[in-house]
Structures are given as C-alpha cells and as structure tokens.
Image 1 (cartoon, rainbow, N blue to C red):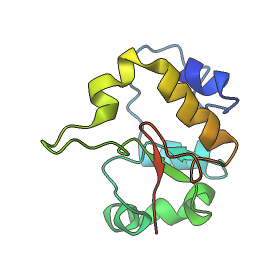
Image 2 (image 1 turned 90 degrees about the vertical axis):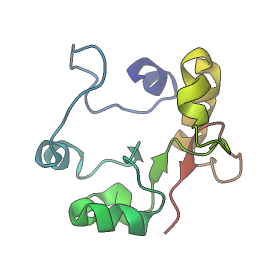
Image 3 (image 1 turned 180 degrees about the vertical axis):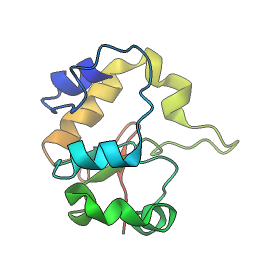
Image 4 (image 1 turned 30 degrees about the vertical axis):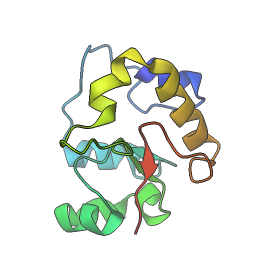
Length: 121
C-alpha cells in the first residue's frame, strides 16, 4: 500500500516504518504526526464525516477532516454485504493506484472511484 501511495505521489507519513502488514497506531501518535496532513485515507468504519466525528470526537483535530479530505475504501459495497476493496483490491493494484491518483489530484469526485470515495459531511 505504501508503494501505491508513493506511485500516486501521496506522501505516506509512515513510509519509513519497516514493519510488514498493517500498523496498529494509537490516535495520540497519529494526531501528533498527521494533524496537518492533506489527506486521510481509510477512516475505519465511518460512512460520513459526521459519523466519523460521532465515533471519534477528536477527528476534528485533523486538518484533512476539517477540509473534507477524508477517503474511505467502501465505494463498491456488494448487496450481500461484501466490500469490493476486500474482495478484489489485492489482485487489482491498478485500480487502487487509479483511485489514489484521483485522490491526489483532487479529481476523485469527478472520476468515481473503483474502491474509494470521499466521505460526505
């Protein structure tokens, strides 16, 4: 994922971390490092900015939240409850990269994402 973000010209704040797999990060550490980040990608289970703030009231401490630059990987939900991101994202890095490029250049709203969407207010 870090490589895809780099390829899309998105600076990943934890790109120097040498761990493999998902990182488990506390909000305090994320806030310290990401408070002024331009983008917030993968905001847990939130379906909207209001929902994110109700789950985590400190979300408004992040500039990306205040400027509505929060993106979630649930653009393609299946009727049976599955999520296209988890179903095919690992085998379609080209589609993930396309989404990240559109997120980076601000055009995701005009180019519907394969897996990602901007969280509405």
